[in-house]
Image 1: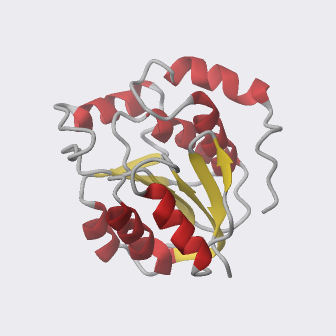
Image 2: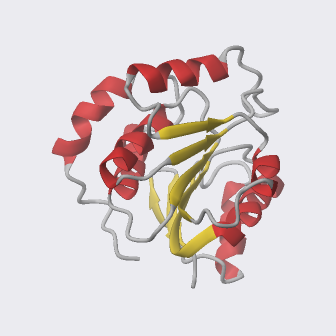
Image 3: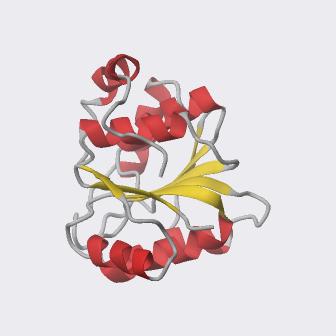
Length: 198
């Protein structure tokens, strides 16, 4: 991989994080910073897909980066919660509100749908440059999310998995590495950052 995630330009991201840090999220500042950095400096063609947006802290971080790189972010979430995080009322409205107040509705498209259903309907002519998976953290679902969108990934696309090391995410990612789908990830706190092998 070609990115040094220990040498971000803090001056660019800090003002953004001061705006979005109040949004409830398990995605830490350094992880949001990595996502922003990737979205801002993507080196392959295509859009950005996030699976699992919740109230949108990571979505906003990615959205700000995407605005700079002239990319569109597709934020996929059924907003019904899951067995690990529980059901949270008002997720969809909360995400829309946060995207609106930070001026990102023109850069982020909300897809209120199950991730696998969204993948079935994904246009074959819409390549993905960056895929961020932060949905249900079981090994089965993590594998299913990646494999469902893998056919649409651009050559050398970036793939990020949140909560690497927790639940079933690590075994899923490690299996993708051993099977030759992705490179050995660089880990930023609990964010595994890697590229597809092409």
